[in-house]
Picture 1 (cartoon, rainbow, N blue to C red):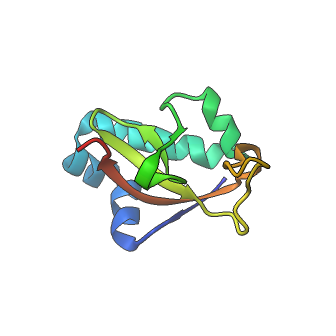
Picture 2: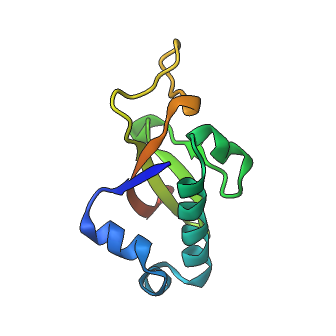
Length: 111
């Protein structure tokens, strides 16, 4: 899968284990690196359903944002980057057709 980053700050944190460890802690940094590696490896987002990290869509004001669990409370947040956005007939995201994502941040989505 193709991965891009929303901005240079996010890319710098995500691409540096040392910086992500200082920012989010050792366990979150390790899970962040594993999540990014998983995203790089899969061909479509649908394959993420079978891997660790509980890839899922968020709801309400964060609709169309996807999340991978790191160490609670942190989540790796990303959005589909395919153009046009692959959708199913019911309007939901077509995970089987999503081949690119944009990393938008690491956040506590419950805080």
